[in-house]
Every structure is written in structure tokens, then in C-alpha cells.
Length: 69
Image 1 (cartoon, rainbow, N blue to C red):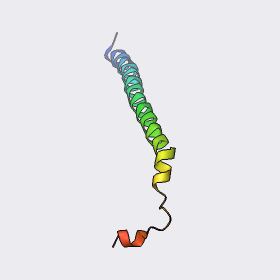
Image 2: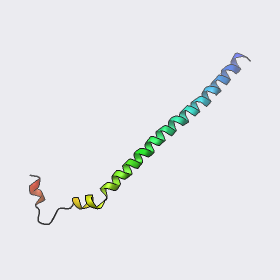
Image 3: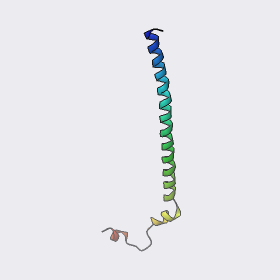
Image 4: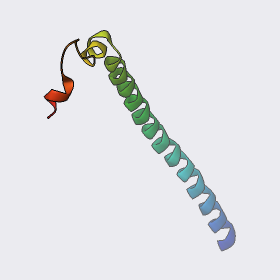
């Protein structure tokens, strides 16, 4: 085996190793993103519930402008 073929095989081996390492890193990042998305969806669901939706309405007769002066 000469130097050129050895270098070619080493480059191929490093490329395969890089693909495996990149796939693993992408999988870890994907899991983090999916967990974050699930937490965000649960948070958004809380804001759309009945208790929070009625809290944004001002009762009749309240002077809301006076409260913020």
C-alpha cells in the first residue's frame, strides 16, 4: 500500500466517522427541540383555558383607564 492509497482510506474513514458523529449530534439536538416544543404546547394550552380566558375580561362598570393612571 502506498502513501496515496493510505491517505485515501484514512480520509474515507474520517468521513464515515464524521457522518456517524454528526448523526448522533443531530439526534440529541432533535430530542431537545421536541421536548421544548412539547413544553411550549402545554404552556400555550394553559393560556387558552377557561380560567385564564375570563381573567382578561373587564367586569362591567370598572373604569380601566383609572386603574392605569
